[in-house]
Image (cartoon, rainbow over all chains, first blue to last red; front, side, top):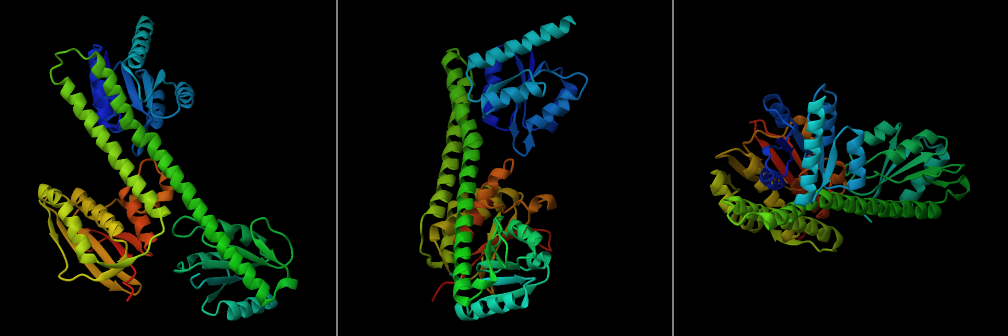
Length: 125
Length: 344
């Protein structure tokens, strides 16, 4: 699966990418929503890990932009905030799930499994 | 208490006479400014000392407006006193029977003291919110990075190529990030909470020490730093002054472009000495300039502002000074701060 990581913290993005590659994913890492948008135009992305707080930008705004499109990959929101609050907001805005920092490999794998399942279900349609 | 400034607005003749008699007797050095509208009062540049707005009870709409006006630090600009009959939840109301200088002086002093405490309270709460926000994201994220890295390291194959090196490097960088942030936050909090006595400081010596600290960065970007041939003495705290210079010179090195020209200058002003760091960089976008020196206690309202200039703002204010930014005529940028002159 091709996974796009949108996070302005380079180390966390790097370690997430490394872990995802260990799970057999191909990863793309960007620090801004503009770069993410450009990449979505050139690569077939199966899932996005999107940070809620992207410096001057908001991951929520980018999620809303994606959700307004006809077709968009499933999004997992990354957050350092409260799981309950972010999970509810993520679902309300159309994300597939959320991953609270710090996360371990098992939690990351669960989100990858959800993306894979989402992909299977939508490829059947 | 420094000499206050009284704004008198829409007062009846007896009320005005009572205030003037009070000022003459209890605040002989105070400034009295008569204004017709709230806009006029708001437009008047803030005084160096405390300010107080005195209104007639008939101007109820202005009472609400007056309590909402913020000063240059974003906190309520003044306490509001109402002269006349009627009660207000927002301001102390003094009925005509009590318009004698002794009672009015007591009310004015109490209002100024209460206002000072209110502002201090708001500042402290703002500091707490700013620190909480920093911890909830800027500290939490690198900590998360370390914990996630540890989780990855546990299952990493024994022959991981360069992966282990990349992870360890990430852990080291994250730990450094946390250390620097904690160090900066605790410095600001300690400076704000501790009482301090400014001393006479040779500014040239302070700047030289900071320049030495940043010498490696100066060489790295190939910048040229020119300094004045002589330096004044100022009244301040040496360690705080070092942090101010470190931030301003560090910013100039970071944003001044490769092989940038950085000029350090100072000039005598009416209220002290102004020190400037002028670089040849591209400057700050106009829409971002208003946010540059946002007070530390209001940083939590911004998405993710830099800490450096907020620290400069706080440390300068604590020493009785001010700071600012402008674009020079030659196209460079100038960050400056002004400090009171050394007490002889």
